[in-house]
Length: 66
Image 1 (cartoon, rainbow, N blue to C red):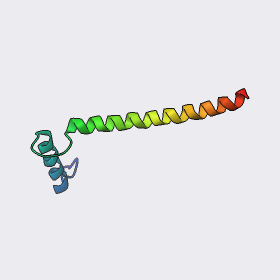
Image 2 (image 1 turned 180 degrees about the horizontal axis):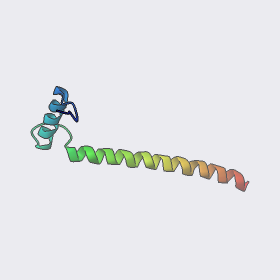
Image 3 (image 1 turned 90 degrees about the vertical axis):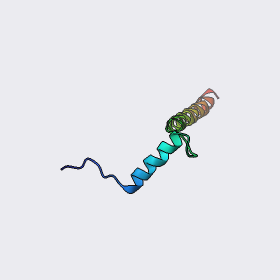
Image 4 (image 1 turned 120 degrees about the vertical axis):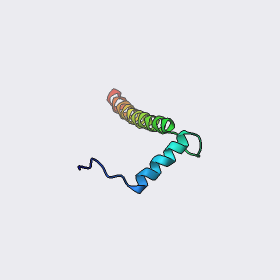
């Protein structure tokens, strides 16, 4: 019998904890809230990078104009 993955006690405990949070039986973020949080963090990281690039471009062009 081949194993595709190891099922640990910790993994099962985490799944049960998340299922209870999703069902409203336990405090914590639901799966959809976790997905939204991850998405917003990615967006924020991308926006910070954009601001950094624009700030450097502004500084470059400001010195070119003088």
